[in-house]
Amino acid sequence: MMTEQEKSGLNSQLNEAIIQLIQAQKYLNQSDFIRSGVYLGTVQDLLPKVHFKLLTANRKH
Image 1 (tube, rainbow, N blue to C red):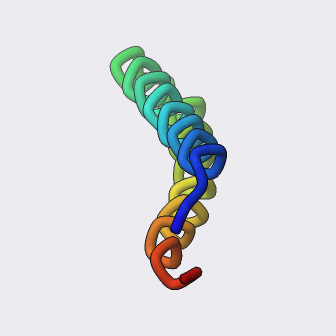
Image 2 (tube, rainbow, N blue to C red):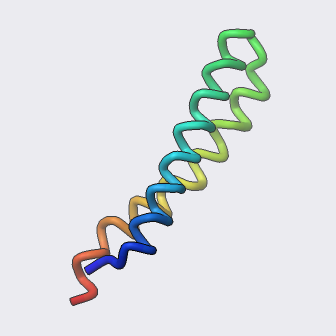
């Protein structure tokens, strides 16, 4: 089971990923491909960690 604090932490991380994706899209639309790629890289680093925590959450019984 996941505590409320853990859920809140994951929610914050997902919100941060959304913000980073919006920034990546903004810079892509401005043809600033390098900056867009940097924001995407941040999301790529973050999401596997969140994904793993979600997949293993029910195994802590």
